[in-house]
Every structure is written in C-alpha cells, then in structure tokens.
Image (cartoon, rainbow, N blue to C red; front, side):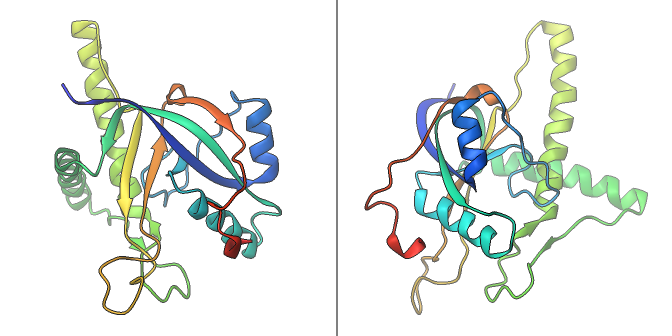
Amino acid sequence: MYDIKSNLVIGFHGCEADVRDELLLHPGNIKFSQQPYDWLGHGLYFWENNIDRAMQWAIDKKSRGNIKEPAVLGAVLQLGHCCDFLESRYIKLLSKYYKVMAEFHNSSGIALPENKDIRNDPNKDRLLRYLDCTVIEYMHDIMNEELQHAKAAHGSFEVFDSVRGAFFEGGPAFEGSGIFAKTHIQICIRNPDCIKGFFKPRVGSSLSMDLK
C-alpha cells in the first residue's frame, strides 16, 4: 500500500558545468553512472535537498583533476517505487539477497568484493562501496528476472524506479558528537521518468561561500 512515493523531492547533482548545461538544454541525454563502487548501485545520483554537499562534491572532484568547472544541477524528482534504505523492510530485503549471493560465491570459490577506503582518508569511511554496489545490483538483477516471469504469468510486474539511503561520514561534527560532518541522504534514480525536470539553482545564502 505504501510502496510508491508519490511526493516530489528536490535533488542536486554535482557535476561539470558543461554536463549541467547539456542536461538543461537536452534533458533526455541522461547518462547513468555504472561504477563498481557506486554507493546505491547504478543510476543518476542526487543529494536530497543538499545543494552545499553537491557543490562540495564537485569541488573535490576538481581538486583531483576530474572536473574543470564545478557546478550543480537541480532536479525535481518523484521516486516512484523506491528501494528506501531508511525503511526497515528494504534493509531486510537487501540482507536476504546478500545471503543468497554470498552462498553462491562461497560455493563457487569466488571472493566477495569489499568496501574500501580511499587513499589518505582519515575517517576510514570506506567510500569505495564495491560490496554494497554488487549486492544492490545483484538484488535488482534477480528481482527483474523474477518479475519478468511474473509478467509472463500475470500480465504485470514492477521494478524499482529509485534507491534512497542515508550516509554518515566525515567524522564527528565536534568532539564527542554523534552527528557526522558529512551526513546526507543520497538518491539514485534508475528510471529516468522519475526526473520531472532539471533546473539551474539560484546561487544565494543557501550555498555556503566557504565552498567557493
């Protein structure tokens, strides 16, 4: 009954300025990330209601030589059938698929991938999520196969349109705190129809001057 998220959400995507401008002019030219370390599996990523974090991510990529001009693209999203890891049942669902995948790997003598730290990360946040990405994609693949059989038998089926998760990283916000400096909610869009439109965010007080 409550599987579909029908409300609209504002998301921000950190990127190269040319990528932002291309999507503003040609919103159908969406390219999904398919990196093996993607935190929520493959798709197009947004920071939920967090323009500062999106810009900081783009600035960090510039410092590593991956972006020339950091920018942020805004989007109006409707998450649809969402695998939301802020809800207990979806965490349990993913754990179930992990057990199946782990049993297969063990019986085949294949080592499971591991989440890893990036070089010189003082917080040891394991930012390269190889294991998480593999399990999430395995879940999607198996569910899609199962649902295709259901479609053939019953005439209808449903796959996940999006994935959503909360992440706690960056170390404590201050000494002794349980609040982390880079805590955020991330959204991974798998179905491009979830993106109702792109926009160029207004630059104002919400975008910290410290990020420039």
